[in-house]
Amino acid sequence: MIINDSMISTIPLYTARQVRALDRAAIEAAGIPGYTLMARAGEAVWDFLRRHWPDARSIVVVCGTGNNGGDGYVLARLAHEDGCQSRVLQLGDVGQMTGDALRARNDWLAAGSEQHGYDEKCLARADVIVDALLGTGLERPLEGEWRELVEAINRAPTPVLAIDIPSGLHADYGTVLGACVRACHTVTFIGRKQGLFTGDGPEYAGTVAFNDLHVPASVYQQVVPTSCLLTEPPLGRLAQPRIRTAHKGEHGHLLVVGGEQGMMGAVQLAGMAALRVGTGRVSLATRPEHAALISAASPELMSHGVAGAGQLAALLKRASIVIVGPGLGQSGWARELLAKVLDTDLPLIVDADALNLLAREPLSRDNWVLTPHPAEAGRLLTISTLDVQADRFAAASALAADYGGTVVLKGAGSLVASAAEPVCVCAVGNPGMATAGMGDVLSGIIAGLAAQGLGLGQAALAGVCVHGLAGDHAAQQGERGMTARDVIAELRAVMEAEGGAG
Image (cartoon, rainbow, N blue to C red):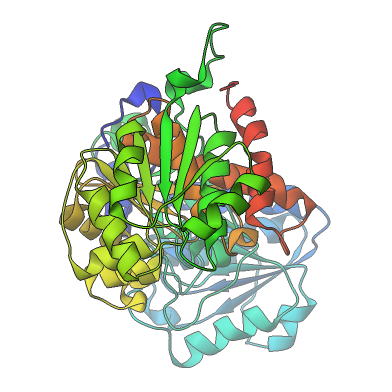
């Protein structure tokens, strides 16, 4: 997945350790005092709060004893000076506060503010709750009064604004550590934390706003990000209008292999998705009893009944790329067809039951894209689904290392990984897409883009983004009840909006 910077627009993501390195570099190399950074952070959150809740007059700031709490004290002071009723709930021993955080608290006290005891009712009465309890250094599950306060915040009907990261969310993995503040918005600083954008991160962080606190570009040159955020599809030349003399033979011939008894819809969805992103021709190899039914429903697809590997050979000779797995099953028929596909040198998109069969007999190759969901990823890595979700970045990288090619680990904040590049996180998509057939559509999109000339790695990156954008278009009619065909119906509009791929 070697992508030239001119082809792809991404945003750097960082681990907590890397952000601490950026913070140190800003202080030591750029000469920005730590308290100046803290003051800028508090001001940035206060400005955000004022823009989003201009009528808020009662604010509760929940502070811990570290620098995250210091940011909260800056905000509380600014709210007090603006005439708001600003109440701070302090958790942890104030006597342990030191450095910039202690200075921020003292400045808050000097402004005439007062410490208040904890009262859960004040959370419900506030206009906004600001979470400044814990920062990015949390590594173990919340317990005791810390967990109780987080759960009380989540019970309150009040909107929550998180400073830097919601308390209880792991900054690197996007997993909940026992309990986590559920924020409407999160304002994060200096470097975007990768855990905000995948796993549980999107659910608990809400919308994420970024502020670099005026840290100079020279600081960022000192830390190489381990991952990146993908916000638009790198379609390359496919974003340009087609020439007037274009013909179908120039835009690839995709073969989709799958569709066991009861699952013929999977190959049909993958094939139609490929056509909708511009593939020239799409053939299906499926159970013989399905071929006529699919042809009647979707005459644009060339549907072939295949009883065994012998009948597949001729179709493989005509194809330029293959999807194997949608609705494939794990029968003898499925294993025979998969073996025949794997015996070719054609570029492959491997999905669904083809991944489960691959887990039984692992192999590695460079010219394929694997598209597992977390359970399939667990089978491929011989670990549990929970282990995959506990560190999605590590799981995606391990899959790429073990199996080669490019891996798309599906889920909230889908990841695209290869052995040679930083892991990319897809920033688009929505919960309405958590329904049957969406994975078939994704495989069709990726294969369709590759069929038209994108490299497999670039097609995977572009494909997850096009898929997510189409889902977001469909969600304008509501997320609940969205179907895979609703997403297919939006693909042409997405491709046109991204430059007119034709």
